[in-house]
Length: 243
Image (tube, rainbow, N blue to C red):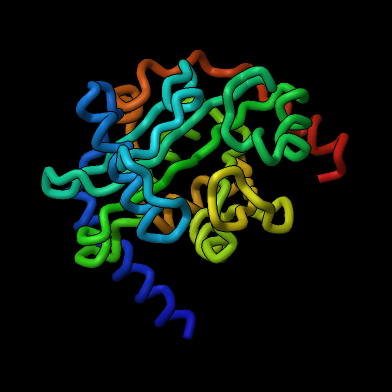
């Protein structure tokens, strides 16, 4: 059984690695690139019954999308725009962070402890590309993982629909922090999940080698990396909360 599992994992990794050769990640910068993101989000959210149809056919959050701590990423397959995810970086509770609107009781203590948090929201994919390529979800979330590495995050936060908790736990080692909660303007209950970015990096990238990256690739997406942190305050935080 163990040999079969290892073999199936190897085949899966090889398949996704081959798929990743056709994938490119970019940060949406021009008005046209951003507009494409807002429309793709809208299509995905309406299709999944998360929001009501709107006359402008776009899903745009000025406060979070235009914040200086935001990166709206686009994933392309064979040059076709296929998926997007927004990344917000926070080092204190005054920073615009989508998860704070509902989960401040869970996130603020981390920020007050001096921890670095990256928050992933507004994930969406084009339906026809998803149907054609089962590997797309893994490619679409890769910029989020790269951001956590680039900004030396202590925790990665994902706010996901309750039915997606198992996927995030199994693939990305996220842990749910609460029961599902109501989320503003979304017709679904949302769970706040967290991954400790100091644990299991080597094991994770050995299992999913397509998540490995270079400094040059991360710099191209997010700009020059910040200076290396002398030490994370995570151990002190975990001792205090008994994690």
